[in-house]
Length: 443
Image 1 (cartoon, rainbow, N blue to C red):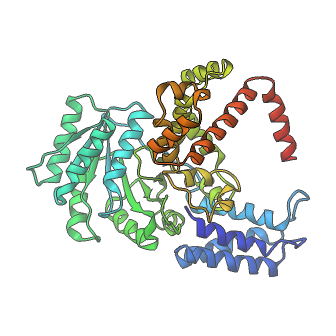
Image 2 (cartoon, rainbow, N blue to C red; image 1 turned 90 degrees about the horizontal axis):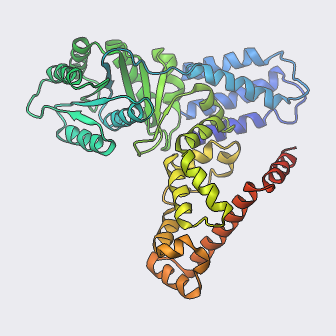
Image 3 (cartoon, rainbow, N blue to C red; image 1 turned 120 degrees about the vertical axis):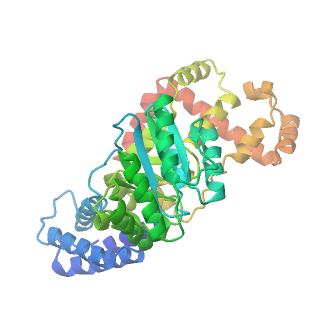
């Protein structure tokens, strides 16, 4: 996410390194690189120009504090301006109304149907809402079927009228159905086209007038850059939507849409899609995204994701097992499943300060755990619960059953033993020693 932009901004700040103060000359050179980085990220030229102008005005004449050098001060100024450029504040979703009606809009291929499912799953699991998904795309044959598959996957009812070709009637009937069946949120997935056309705009405008949604969201493929911003403006002129959803931020995203869209349509980015899984949805926080773009990480989001997967009862069970030396591969497997639920690995690494830069050339496969899982699944229940019973012959059998080598089995055993020792240490007085060591390393 934004890897190319992050790298180029980092190079721009290097211009100031070694300088004792911020001057008009070194700022001009730095901002020239910043503007070039933004344009390469497909940010609108006028927005990039205004952005760098504001930074220059703030930077010139600033006293560099003793705790900061000019480069650090410039990073802070750019971070604050990036935050403002992307909206400044986090804006939540409006869930008023009985039921709340959410209208999804956007072009075909933007990820609208998939995101409708992600939003339904988010509202069901995080907000405890009874959600109804509505298939109002009467043109694309597979659209309703796709929504039904998604609905089944997340356990949410999908309302569809396969023979009805009037999306306005479908939407109105769906709301009646929701009221009769105690649904608190209705998410209407509308039709998209490959390009903006009059028929589509008239249709979605008619649906909007008929259902009077509390929330109208425009879904945009973040990989399309300035095209996405232009499309957003066309939709906003007709719908006056409430917020933007950026999908496919886990891909090779240059960042132009995220950085430009708020300025052009003056509407907040409310959600981002960060992967293919139904859980891969995040509330958009402009300040956190600015920090990630500048390589500062996003520890707050990382902790939030970890807390979402944290099971207090399961943690207590594992603590008891560790204390009794009964921590086995089944428990290890559960820990892996929790990590996988947090999101794709490259995205998680980008949340750790400095790690994104270190890992930029490393290909982190989302299937990185597959080999480990295959090895564990090739063990007998007794071997998983009592790893000490695994001898050389058993390792050969496990390797053969998992399609791996004995060396890989040995490596996993070694990692498992090291992890077990560390967890045991954290349980006892060693936890304090480890914290003291970590503090010493940071100083």
